[in-house]
Image (cartoon, rainbow, N blue to C red; front, side, top):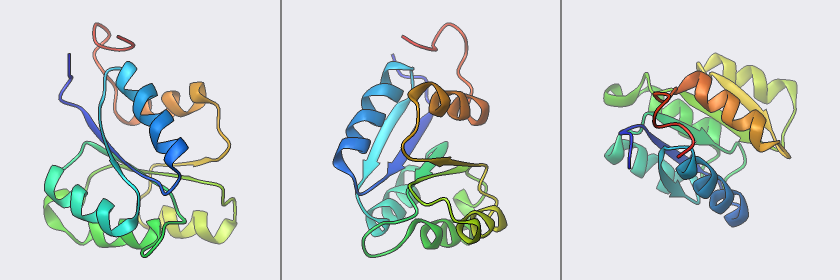
Length: 131
């Protein structure tokens, strides 16, 4: 059963995309995947997801650039964005905060921490969570 709450995951690591897709789908979310910044931008504009999870380091166009471009695209400029990355540099965090990024999760992460952050941003009704 789908909730109508969709998440677009943009990460160049196949293993991370696969894990997050399975994990978040089991939690009750509809999940879409992109492996680079250009594909993520295209899918975000066409799907209008309820949440974007972006890696900072992406081939072609980095996640901060994707976020900046989405903030300029009126139909989805207020869509919540969460950054997921191995980067823990203060400069990247400040840039993300300047773009209105709601959360910054550092890889490697615990699945329980990730779902906690996702549910804070995009809660599901109790009867649909964790199906």
